[in-house]
Length: 261
Image (cartoon, rainbow, N blue to C red; front, side, top):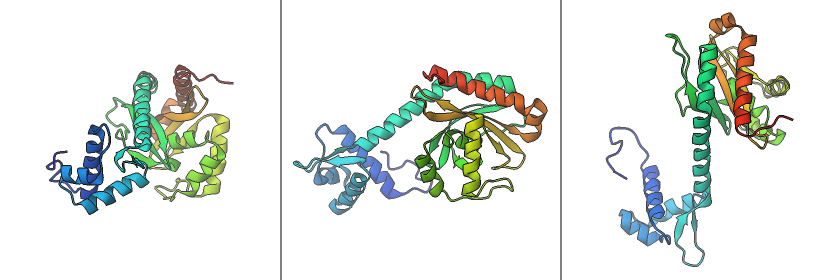
């Protein structure tokens, strides 16, 4: 890695060093020992050991019990696999997002759940001068987004409990749900009706309507949503938009092999 990268921005040196360690391990077929890595990168042996031990604890790398050499671990492959799936899903979903944006005339989004946040992985931006969009790759709390609530409502209860109990609820607007019991009740309603709404819960004057996307195993892996100024969505008809969103989510789900029971 070029040490001059981002030299004008604030960075964390240990993170850069960890990435450089991973790059060296990725280039090695048989793995590398602490001293080998230290010599290659001109790091102190002690500092290198601590970096390796941290990465090992996170399962990003693993150590051969006999040779004591390190190599890339399973967790990094898992993360790469998730990234590939997200990229594939985003590519597959784009035509559906474009179609939805054309029908409604507002920005459409595809989000996935990551812990207690959602990540925006695909989008079709409105052509209106006044439009709502969130930068791709951005993470926002799940509980104040239609997309996040749509996905979580279809997760097993143990997953819901884990997410809810590890969430620090912040009131963004007067409509933001910040009570766990209230949110649990809403998740039940969302599951019954098949769609979720962000009723100005993250930003005043902005409404989001979302529906879950299912894979071939029947698991809710993402959600499709429409976001726009509340007054404009009301003018176009909330009921009509809900149908547009749920129909599009169903079409994408079916393209992934989902068969509704």
